[in-house]
Length: 185
Image (cartoon, rainbow, N blue to C red; front, top):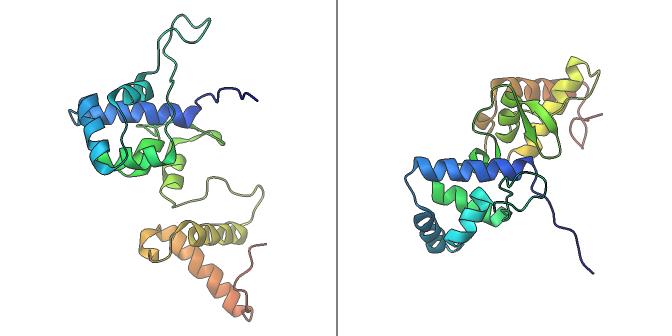
């Protein structure tokens, strides 16, 4: 059984552009980045890095010989590249500029500032349509609780998120609490 080639989506293209940009900003050659990755235990050849960054010319019929990325980045590659380039993973995943709108795989076009805040685990990407203020606070509080790893305090969230969580818990306590914690409707 053969499977079709999985095309690179908007996030894959963003990662490729960011790897190329950051490597250049750091004055690293493809070979130097390859050596750093090998040293970290996640070897990627200079050729593989070139394919990630630039693709292959003339591989997309009818597109006038435009480059087509031919090497996808898996999550282990992504983490190793972030470590080697000394940036947080989100710097590779989100477009360099978040002015205007950006395209995210699975979400389509979203405001750039929202994409960045979502990637930082500060706000949900979407809010329920027609939700009142209490429902939005509950959603934000639950989002922050699930998006923030155990051991990271509330100091890592926004003041807005802290206020929302405190209000949800205050309302829950005022209603008599319960064994399962505040509801999320």
